Length: 464
Image 1 (cartoon, rainbow, N blue to C red):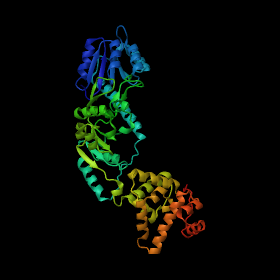
Image 2: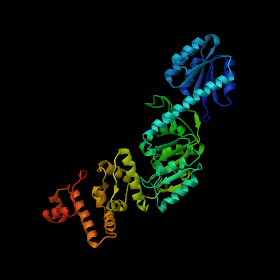
Image 3: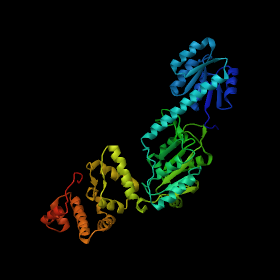
Image 4: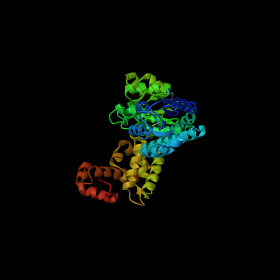
């Protein structure tokens, strides 16, 4: 068993040299020694190493040929050549074949450790670059949580209490309620905030690739595995691993995840080497894991391990006062992104938004506001007539519009507001064909035309 310390391979036919290097390195690193180039190539094909010290002069297969064969197997593996002083020119030439550096005998203890630290620093930086590139497409950088509702206060309080611990957290809530934002808040307020936050959508990864995605794999571990790949657990070392849609995990991987949670160790696919990591696990689901446990589709022991600290996110429809707040927030964001100036929302538009039940929650609202900004007229307000038919036609929205439009207004104005909305819906439903709309409303076409004029109903560009 090894930890996240580097694994070093020493290749030299001289036992004294192997012992000397082992003595220098073994206190801080996992060291494996072999006495020939053939054994070195075989070791690299069957084990994982972070660095190789390789002697140039060896019987049967010399260091240069060994270097070429190892690089043919894994071009990213760093190799430091070992040479005598009188073979330094040959060691220098080995760099042309992919060697990272060389050292000469007799060894200087500090030089060896300094060269080793440089190599490992470079490898760690490359891992971080690789990770950030793989995450860039999925991370928006938006971690701000917007709310003024009382039922979100309890969520914020729990996040504050749990953030600085390493306890596993289970976030539940409907789709689109912001579960990943809460997971990021837990990470950003923790002592791990300077380490990676790695997010995985379990529903988006095929079951047969889940193990390789999370644990990584060795070159040749399966068809298509053309190179060694670091898994997300390794990327998340000392940070936070967020598993979204945890309910989608197949039973066979549930057992492997349980073992990882218990032991905090794993092996890459195609490897026998055990790797230990320090990872805080946060998971999320929009389904009831408790019900899945009762149905036998989710392991109860894994559920209990994950559900150490539960956080329940309320749906947007229960977050009083948050819809107008979020609508303004998204409007400002998309105005800036698209270099536009949509001024805001009319009271009637806000009344529709505020009473719509938002089955898609915050994500649905965000997508709607983005559409409104794309289609909206410059320097104008978004009005009820600009909103999609589905929002206007919803029964709850109708009640809300009647209420919102009639507040502080007389009966005639309230009736006109409702009549305008009702006719607008009919026109949109009939794609603004006035004859069809009149038949739907049960009135003459001329009457409809008069109503449209008196209520200032005109077709906009985005009404299709």
